[in-house]
Length: 449
Image (tube, rainbow, N blue to C red; front, side, top):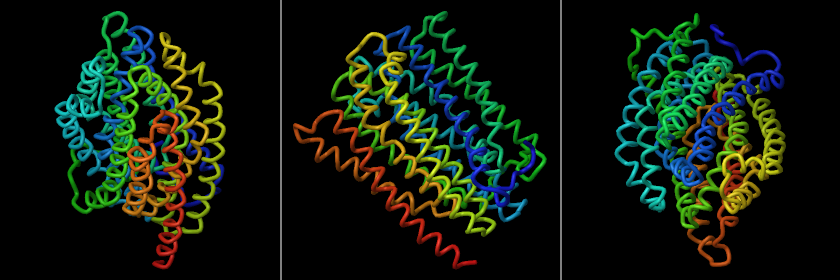
C-alpha cells in the first residue's frame, strides 16, 4: 500500500477486523520467532539457558518501553494529521520520528550494555543464571537501534492504514532469525549469545525493509532521507503523547521486575516454568494488544476529523472483539498448556507443573487485560496520554507492588499462584477506572467542536 487509507469513512465492524488481523499475525509471528530463541536453546542447551533468556525479559522491557512509547506518540501524531488532512504536518512528523528513533536506539545501547549485570543482580538472578543472562542482554542491546527504527516506522505505516507491510517484512526477517538460530546454536556450538546475535541481525533486516517501504510511498508519509530533521513542534507532540505512554510501559515493567524477582526467589525450576509460560502467554497478549493498536489509530484519525460518533462505536466494537478473542485464545492456551510447555522444557516435569500454574492464573482471565488495553488505546487515540498513564501506574503498578509487599508476604499466601493473581486484580480495577476517564475525555472533546 502506497497511499493513505482513510479510517474516517465506510463501515466500521468489518474494517476493524480486516485492519486488526494483519497486526495480530505480525505480532504472533514476531513472538514465534522470539520463541525460537527459547525453544532452540532449551532443546540444545537445557532449561538453565531457558531461564537465562527468560530472566532478561522484564528488565529489558523496563529499559526499552520508555522509548517504544515514543513510537506510539509518532503514530498518534500521524493519525491525527491524516484525519485532519494536514499533509505538511504528516510530512514533518514522519521526518522527525525516524531520526528520533535512531537517537533513542543509541541511548538504549549505552544504557543496556552498561547496566545489564547490575540490574540482573538487583533482581536476585541466581549465580548460575546471571552470566548467561548478562551476555544475552548485552548483545541484544548492542543492536537495539534496529528495533527502534522498525517500531517507529511500523507505527507510521499503521497510522496510514497499512498493516500488511509490517507483516510481510517481519515474516521475511523472522525466517532468517530462525535459520540463524539453528546455525549459531547447533553448527557454531553457541549458547544464548547465538540466539541474541540472530535476533539482532533479523531486526536489522526488518528495519531496513520497513524504511524502504516508507521511502516508496506516494503520499505525505513518504520518507526522504535527505529531509530528515527534528521539527520542534512535531517532536513536542510526539513527546507529549508518547512520553506518558513510555513512562507507563516502563512503570509496568518495574512491577513486572518486582514480580520476576519474587519468582526468582523460588529458584531456577520455577524460573524456567515461568519463562516458558510467559512466552506462551505472550501469544495471547499480542493478539489482544492488536485491538489496542486498532483503537489508537482508528480513534486517532476520527478524533482528528472530529467524528466523535464513530469514536464511540469504534471503542464499543473493539471491546466486544477483544473480549471474544481473549476468552477463546486464553482458554485454548490453558487447555493445551502441558503440550505447549513441553515444547520449551524437555528436562524438568516440575518446571512444566509450575508453568501450568502460571497459565491457569493468567491465560483464563486474560480478556480483562485486553479490555484494559483497548480503553487505554482509546484514551491515547483521543490525544489524552497523560490520563491513562496516571491511572495505569496507580491501578496496575500500585496494586501489584502493594500486593507483593503485603498479601504475598503472608506465609500461607507466599506461593506462585498468589503472586500471579495480582495480575487479574490490577487489570480489572484499571479497566473500570479507564472507562470512567474515557467518558469525561470524550465529553470534553465533543464540547470543543
